[in-house]
Image (cartoon, rainbow, N blue to C red; front, top):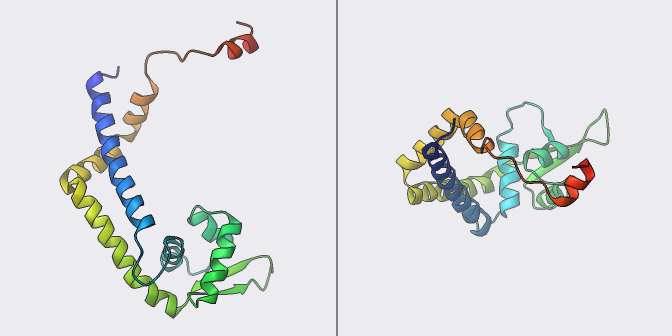
Length: 170
C-alpha cells in the first residue's frame, strides 16, 4: 500500500528533476552557443561526433537520434553541408540512403559549442544543488518501478464521462 509520505517524496523528487531539466532546456535552447552553431546544429553535430558505430549515420538515423522529422533533418543537414560542417554521400547499394559524416571543420566548431553546453549543465546543477540533484537521480534510478506503481495506484477508479458510460451501456 502506498503511503502519503512516499507519494510526497516521489513528487518532491520529480519536481527537483523537472526543475533541473527545464533549466537545462531553457539554457541550451535560448543561449547562443560558442562556435556560432544553432541548438539544432549543435545537437546534430554532437550526435554525429558521439556515434558509437563505425558506420556513418543516415539522415533517418540522425532524425531519430535528435527527435526530429526527416524533413527537418534533411533541411538541417543541407544547411550544415553548405556551411562545411558535415559531408553527405549516397549509399552505393541503395541510393535512397544518405550518409552524414562530421567534417574537421564541424569538429572544430563543435568543441567550443560543447564547452558552452557543459558550462550550462554545470550552472543548472549548481543552481539546483549537486547533492540534492544527485540524490534525486539516484532515487529515481533506484526506485523507478516503485515510483510508477505509486503514481498509478491511486486507489480510486477514474470517473467516466457520461458519453463513455452511454457507449458502454452503463
